[in-house]
Image (tube, rainbow, N blue to C red; front, top):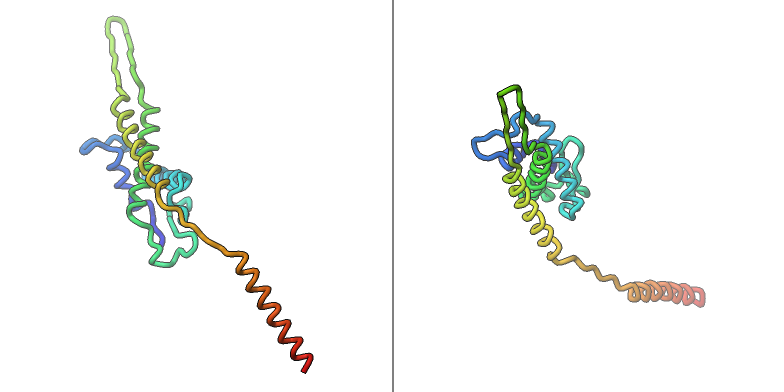
Length: 173
């Protein structure tokens, strides 16, 4: 079953905005969706969600069987995508934060200072969480497969010789 990332734009907005303070009110839904889609692919590059794909419209589907309801996209992975998107938004916001501005016109002076310290700390916290998640994924057991080529070879050679013997016995009779 397909999942539309557009449904989780409110989650992303809550992730990057302090309660009661709309910091990104001029961001369109298309931009938010772009952040979520980019976050999906960044998380995929980090090793999460290897069995899923996302198109340019933000529709996430299972790679092998998109119509199987058992292959529904888990909610915790949506949270992971929102986390990655939040990191991207805050990182770009920090890049866009001016540190100080001052202007003088005759005897009048105006100056303002914006501190990116709080945003930088928040970004650091989110990146630490991302690091923890990556470490957890690396500690998961890796599936191991065993293929006994020798037995397979002996079986097929035995089957071949068994068929050959039957054929020769048939010729002899």
